[in-house]
Length: 277
Image 1: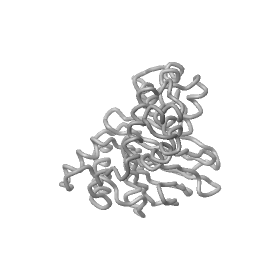
Image 2: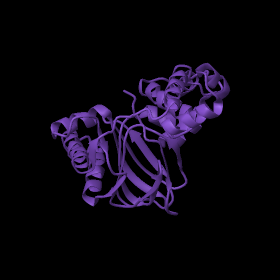
Image 3: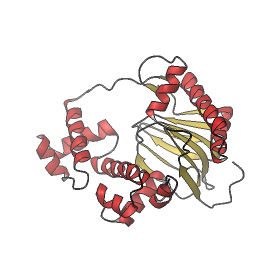
Image 4: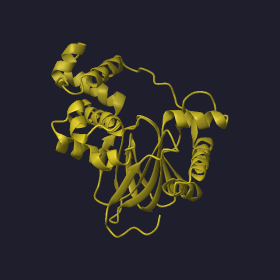
C-alpha cells in the first residue's frame, strides 16, 4: 500500500464492475471512528499500517499489520484508531452470495458459512487482500477475480464453519423481530419507543432490553444504521443524496452526510460517484 502520509485521512469505497457481489474500501483513518453498525454481507479486512481497534459483542480486538479481521453478516461492531498514527487497511466486503458460491466450490460443509475467528495473524493472507485491491485498481479483471477467490477460499477453509441457526431464547426475541420489521417498514416516520412497545403489547423497557439482546444495539441506533444501508442502495442506483436523505427519513442532506460518513467511511457524494455508470 505504500507509506501513509502522516496523519492525513483518506478513503476510497468503491465497486469494480468485473467483481460483482463485492465492495472495496481502502483507507487511512486517524480521527475517524465508526459507530456501532452491522453489514448485510461479510467483512475481510487486512490491516496494513497502525492499529485498528474493533469493538465486537463481548470483546475488543486490536489488529496491527499482517492481521486479517473477519466479521460475519449482521454482527454489530465499532472501529477506531488504536494508536496515534491511526490505521490503514484494505477491506473486502463480499456478499452472502459470493461467499456461498466460493464455499460450494471448495466443498465447505452445507449451511451458511460463518467465520469462527474475529482476527487472525496471516501476513500472506493480508498481502493477498491488498493485491486484490491493486489488481482491481489497475483494471486487471483476471488477476482481481483469481486473487479474490483465492483469498475467500483461504479464509473459509482455515477460519469458517456453518453459522449456527438463531434460536429464539426468550419470548422477547419475537417482539424484537416484530419491532425491527415495523421500523424497516416505517423508516421515514418511525414511532416512538413507547408507541412501538404499545403496538406490540409490551413495555418500553422490556422491548429495549429484548432489542439490544437480539441485535446488539438499541432501536434508535439500529434505525440509523438501517437508514444508511438503504441510502447506500439508493445512491448506488443513482439517486441524488438530498433525495435519498428524505426517502430514508433523515431530516436533510447534512443529516445524511453526517451519519453516512461515520458509518460507511466516505461521504454519500463520493460513494455515489464511485458507482456512477
